[in-house]
Image (cartoon, rainbow, N blue to C red; front, side, top):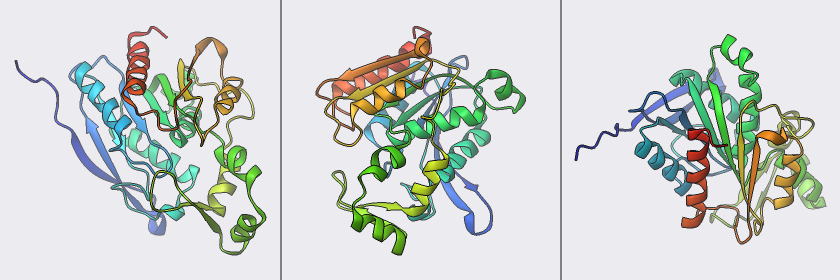
Length: 274
């Protein structure tokens, strides 16, 4: 049997100019079935494009013949730039640049944790009122799968719980560190990230995605409480949103049974069942 899947293209683009320039690493799987939407991976805070869910998304694209785009934000994985320089606006700019470079016609955005916030902001910037997207030459969005989404996490999940010591560190050093459950290296939260997060908030009104949205959320998630997903639901058009709560699911949602849920959600969007 002949393998008709296309080889993955690895490339790097430069985003920004002067001191703000940084190299962004991309993995792009070309389609063998051109009519299918492109799957676009938007990773979480300090994650990269070689994680379990990103690889499984790419594997599904390969099996279906769809195109798949993965990339690392600056300061993450194979991309350049300093992690401490990262903000939602900066990482959003990189996502926009990747799509502008590769020029997919239709996309399904797959956002994990912070990537869910990036996906929603990207939807706004693309102008998912389809007329605006077309006038700007951007892709149409066929759907979104948000996995343990963390929109507005800086203002909703971090700022309200800052200790006096952390507030002092932000004021004096411009950042504070916090032990990570997923890495020996601590999480770093900068004053720039938190201040930029305030201007990128999405849960301030209806988020007009212009497409079906499927949210996968663990009820045992210690990082993004499932009530955050319920709150997000209030800001999305109800007719186009499906929420799957996984009673024993954690934040990563990368167990075999969780991967099955992600793949099924993607296949339903691709086939138009959601």
